[in-house]
Image (tube, rainbow, N blue to C red):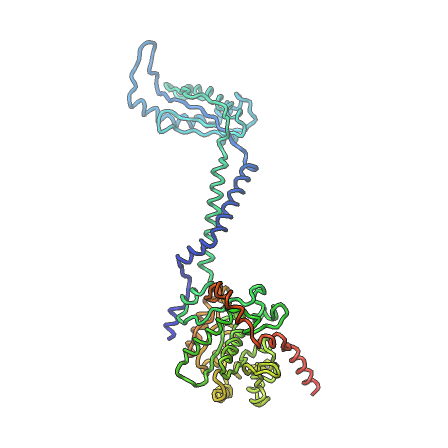
Length: 517
């Protein structure tokens, strides 16, 4: 079993279809960034880059005099080859310090030899005996002036240095009428491509290294266990208002905008109600043909995934079928059922397991006076210093075995396995574990590690509840929801939970009683 799980343990996987889908979903961002980069590059070029102008002169290289008076001589291929080889020599002569000094004296420009040399470039034209000299300057008149000076000075210097050769001007310099650089269009296109490439690269890298569960497909691809229900976000505007966390998240947004959280009923939408009913039905099919009491643990990989709310709604949904249901808060480090239900925090599970009270004292009905109770609850009790020792004790096992005779279902609200190992201590005494996975929140690596831990303890994982699912309507069409949603949205239990006293008030009263004693 361990090897099987290890094979499912995820590393960095590249899913081309998923990458393409991510790029398609972010296409608006990719195009927007590319356009912005193109505009920025264009404006930056226009305002901060100085235009450059080019003026050029072309020279023909001759290695001997081919005419003398009226006599003419034919030009052989060896003469042409020799002329081509002289091009490099002529360019070297052009770029000597003496030539630079002569050009500066001739033109009277205020340039140093080094600056002038940077402005001049020369090369052979298509590997022929013709070479071209190009002068680039921010001043078009200056460029033409320097080109004229070179056309006058260079042939004379070549003739004086290399005997029997000459350089004749083929194309005279002209004043440039338009800049040669920069190209606004080219730079804008480059900016667009750079923005496009960078944005695509960032999205691809984020997608490859992102281990957050973004969809139900991420769950099915990383786990062999089925998704039993997809519960939509019941309070999307609160950004996780009813979720509770450990550590640094402790105390953050512990309520629905200051209101008491609600269960299945008037305060919850139709899609969520049906999702929990679907979960109830599938769990019943999992235990079909067996009328024994079933102990179901509800846990998660991380805190803040909504496992406690799922446990409450599952217990409520089971009770609507006339089943006797017991909900037990086994999260002694961070109990939350007393903040979600109209019950007292003490006495609870920790009080009984520590021997501070009798078993009968910890059961509390979940309902208001004068009405039928939906189910019974056992709160976590006082925060003990040794919760894992209490949960793994023989007394805990005996308690669950004894309670099987009195209930149809026992729902255990367990701590997240990714943070504490308390849930693993109780897993051996359960008939199955239900994992709650919050979409766009849970970590794939932690989820797989949680599954591996439960399988190592030989606990049966019943399936996964995808919480805060973005699946539209929980599988129902908008037309169906509009027609039937409001009809079943109400419940007699909705009002009682909304008007329930807070657990903090009960705990404060209990503390005062302890002090008085």
